[in-house]
Image 1 (tube, one colour):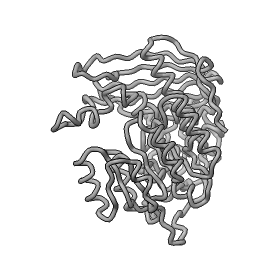
Image 2 (image 1 turned 90 degrees about the vertical axis):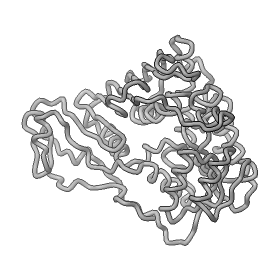
Image 3 (image 1 turned 135 degrees about the vertical axis):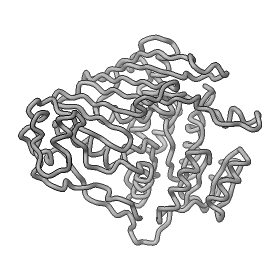
Length: 404
């Protein structure tokens, strides 16, 4: 498979130092990977749900030699028509169970509303097919455990669509944190802001709930499940800890249009290791957009979806920069722009799809798997409970998951 950029990049100059310490010791890199095994093997994919996300997967798959869409499914006729244009040789289905019966399908991408994931994932596994399930993985503890048990008892690959775990940028940040370069973690602050009503245009009202499913609790967990779940998963990964208590507020304050899910949410959490997590999302102001701030005792990392910067707590590093020939580094420290992290942050979904291929070829579960997805799912469930009840919730009061 051909990727636009190398999976991981080495520092261009390893003599770079900040605060008297070689930065290259902390910006760790893995080996480059070429997933085109030249075996000629192609994984035949069925896509269930071909709205924005599912059709996006179909477009990316065209760029990956080891994947081919051979089937797709949706209940909305015009989406089936659009999918046919993306994969004219593939077979279209109105019922996902018919797609699962298709012997030409090796793996299934589930890109349907959140509430449908559990049954569809279990049915796909029972059909003997690998699963790429979009986030949030599963709604509800019982269905989450059923999927966990099924994956753990078999040899099928299960990938959860928290694609940032596959991003070289986010992986490098994980290495920086684990190395101790920014010191012990103190807190993680996340936001995902937009300024629009999050609605899709509906020409026929009979499809309102299907097209605008994010507005309705029957199908959706709203901003927490559809946006912030990515950042919850990253926080779980970076802290290497488990949430203990959660509180939050939210409401339908800006769009009185019949929606049932909140148009703004604000959540505070604490991990077992003492790190705090704040999560905020609004649909009424886009300032800052998507951002994660990771605060350590020695420094801070600020992440967007595609870029990252490190800010030192060391005043000497701030004032002097201590750079070699890296472009603009001294000025960056002095102007508080931070130190750019040299890693590819683009096309994280492409990296995730490549990880899915590698997992199937090697029979090894991917970095974003059923276990990490299950922990994120439980986190989302408890956060939603805290928001809807307006009460503090505790992880220990909810059903314990058996991850292995």
